Image (cartoon, rainbow, N blue to C red; front, side, top):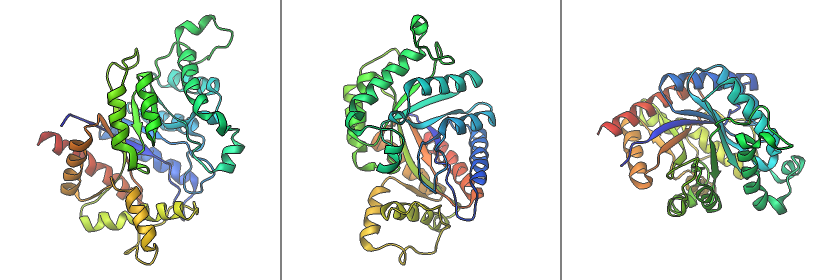
Length: 334
């Protein structure tokens, strides 16, 4: 079992009875907390038209978090690139890197991060997405290169800056692309675990060394809920279960507080669907989290685990990340 880093994926979750301003302040608090715990990076994910997620203006929010922290890497997990002009993203992240040198990551996905109607409003063309996404990655690399200084179209700021690119995915398509481009790969195991093992195998087997990455680098994004007791952790996890039920029902309302039992909320079919989507979710007290981390790493042998934590109470969310840090250290010492 190789050493691994731990990081944070934050969806800027909006909770019932809370404002979006509260959400952003909680995100900054979490970033400060995990920075003090030596988490490697703090990523924010682009979503649109969802009452439960406030990270739609991802670049703006990255700037807010980076400005309120000192050393933790901050980035996108990810920018949904076909929603944007490559030049605009190059300029935005060039600006961020110029403001916060050596701390900005650019994770890139091809999904819309929303429903079909909103994707249309974003100007996406589904017919060309599979050709557009790889082309846009190449465009970004060109805009960030020093060699682009003589081009007629330049990214200023952005040109000549070392901004790491990561390919995000929830299927095997992205694994082939990340391997071909020789870029680090992050998989969305927190909501699409079905193809994760196959995607990692494809990425490792097909990886081509590049100037950006000399060997495969894998980040596994997973859900995590940790507490002082196993009973408390499992109750806290009902916020996550309710969030997935809302997705199944196409009801993207703000996140709900935990409940004593889910039996009156989900049907047997919905329960099966949710548990299938959350098969790699880590839930428990510190000793249980240690065992689950160890088991996960023995199975997947990733370079980094990125923890997404749907916990309603903010202090308990902070405490959960503290427990994950202690559990990770204990696993590596054992």
